[in-house]
View 1 (cartoon, rainbow, N blue to C red):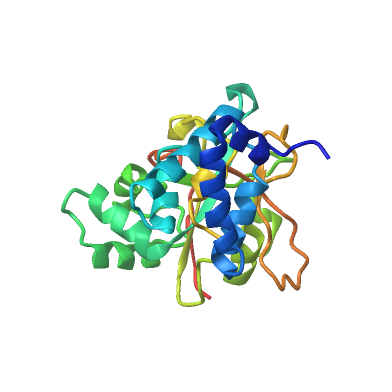
View 2 (view 1 turned 90 degrees about the horizontal axis):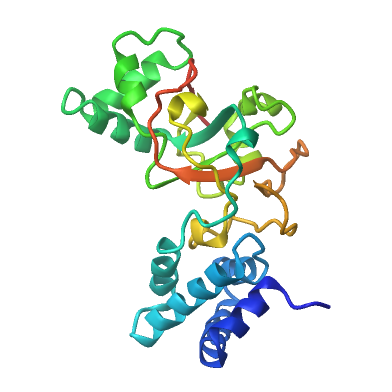
Length: 268
């Protein structure tokens, strides 16, 4: 078999880096979460050879400086985000969507209101106006609110890029988490579903996700096709409805200027 992207990157990084990285990943293998992360790294195909080698070198360098392995991995990843293939502007989907923790979005909304709303007030208003096409005075604050912090993960309808991507599966907490591989959410996490027009939200560059974007998440899965323009989610088990993997991209933090109403709050 030809060498993998991971193996090629270790060769570029050099034998000392390769040994350090391999030793850590070997130790991680028996752990459910850490073993999954190490397998994601070895299966990564979206990073260029140079960027992949630099990521692994950064990881090993911080280990050599005394950082704990997980902290070293997180730090290395944060220096190598948004490096997956960029989707050409002409090929970008028109409409994107994501599910976010309601509490997190309320905090962002409160911050965007510049003191007009507390986080508790923002959460109450989001609950009140869920499903409304005219959320009154809240609309101005809504559109100033970031769609997420730092790096935004999003999905879309690859068949109909103008469509609401959440129309492809049931609008339930379980189905949304299952289809999008959102294993970090529990039944206690209320979700808010956001759908937006890409151009109206500033047309931030869309990238194929990489293991660096995912950091230490065990729910990311690298897409095996190195030439694919975007990533794919891995639906969570047991997936009784047989929900299919969904397209996924990452982009830098941006505003909700292109938000489509209504937004939806989803309880478990």
